[in-house]
Amino acid sequence: MPDAPPKRRRRTAAAPLPTTPGTPRKKAVAAGPRAPRRSRAGAAPEAAELDRLQALIAESLDADKAEDIVTIDLAGRAAFADRMIIATGLADRQITAMASHLQEKLHQAGIRRVQIEGAGGSDWVLLDAGDIVVHLFKPAARALYRLESMWGAELDETAPDASEAG
Picture 1 (tube, one colour):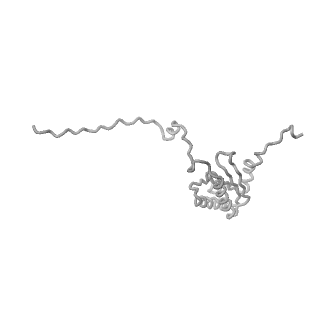
Picture 2 (picture 1 turned 90 degrees about the horizontal axis):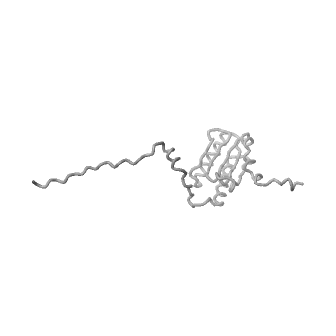
């Protein structure tokens, strides 16, 4: 009998990997916290870079006729940002325009992801540019929330002891 052709082996499907039941969110929670991300340089932003961005923001707000522009240094006091800038606008359209102009200028300066909250016509708009947070208020909302008194430098000063008073 002539040589028979070789038999072909059938490939069998590998056994499926065991899967964990649940949604991706539940799986992420079960996996635990991720390691913290590092910035490109691997360290906190330099003070010169923060000063440059702060000047850019203040210049933009001034050009948009913002009132009472206040800058508060949060370094060592808050984990969410190193600087906070607070300004007042008189109308919804002015505040919305200030927020969109800031977003454009920060994008041009290299800040790719600027989060804006409340831009749809509210008394308070927040821009999160990473290490700098900008609050844009109407006058009544600014007086109500009083962020300057909450984060201002006078909170760092210690009150005199009663024994020293007198």
